[in-house]
Image 1: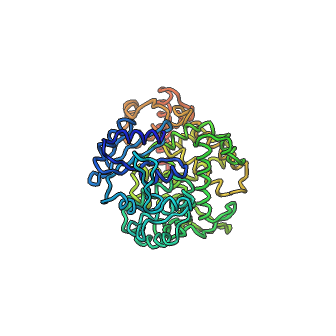
Image 2 (image 1 turned 45 degrees about the vertical axis):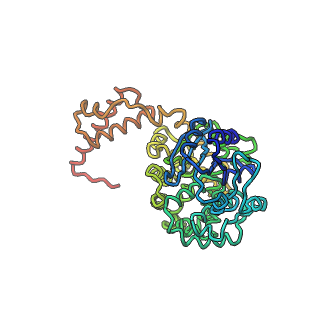
Image 3 (image 1 turned 90 degrees about the vertical axis):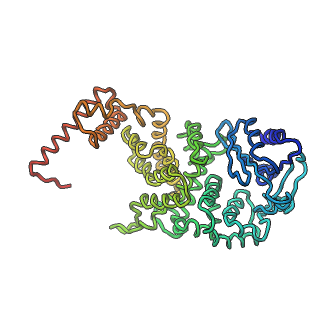
Length: 506
């Protein structure tokens, strides 16, 4: 959506005599020639009334964020589902300059009156810092007064390619000790901006350098120095950050806007060759909004960061003297779920993250068979992963690539791609046949035909029938009932055998 048109609509929607100012990151990003995703406006007057008129003209959603402080949001979406937010807030101080000086960093403390767009109001010399690629706090206590700004500082430094000014860096380090005063929701929201953005691994490295990581995510800090046997070429810490980097690269070439030069290198080129046909499906999948309009991409990158957090707890030597991490995916799931709940993610997000972490080895196991997964295996995969199945595929590819790095064997990579292709094909081209076949019989049918009591037996029969449908072995109601009868007879025969006094060695 064109930013100039939006600014024109806001200007035209404001009553005569109302001064509306564009402030913050929108100005910064326009001056830098970057894509703008958020526009912040401040004014004296009724923010809700103005926001409502803007929302009506632009056909956007309208939300009251803080009625007491007069903060209202308009959410717009383009044809690809990408979001642009417009926030309208009241000027909080006696003068505009005081309001700007109360903000976090100088590059975010510039304003433009919409009716005087050629004049930048810049009381903190943010334009100079912008030219010199410097992130500087507006005041000597800006970060200390609101410690969540420490997390924002490392995010902005990486995303803008700026260095953090020395005194501001000192504030960031000191503010880490004050983060316990900040609500989990505010920390979560800043963290989501990190994992939904680019170069997440660099932000995490900077968090580690400033002390933020040890305070907020000690389970990630604990990955440092945990060694792994070949074919791993990095320890768990470096592998994890490499996994995040590889995931970003894969998402760019598989779900981003197509560019011929984006898939340079054999690894990415082969990924596009095998999975490029699902670009639009992947785009829609990743843009499918989660609660509070958070994105699947962020949750997926959070899974990449946490997928091996269970390894320090499960490291042990096997009988051959080889270091193993048996069951690490279950420990990682527990750790990731605990952290997500502490950050007050929704139940839906926590469950999806848990599924990705628990099943993140599943595609590797399927690919290691050397054969394409059977229809029954594909059905079971999506039965166990649900909407997160595609997420598991994407993480698995990034994980495998980050195991080997530049030593990745092409045959191993192609086996993983073939498996992911089979899973995505089933999900998006054969969903009704393999992933979610229509019910041929109901539980009531089974109860009435075979005179069963409601309970686990009926549920197990229904699942057996659906598996057989997915495998192509059952296609009609009659065949479904025949299968159910066969299973019941086998179970009855097994019960009779168990009364004969024999024993079985397992």
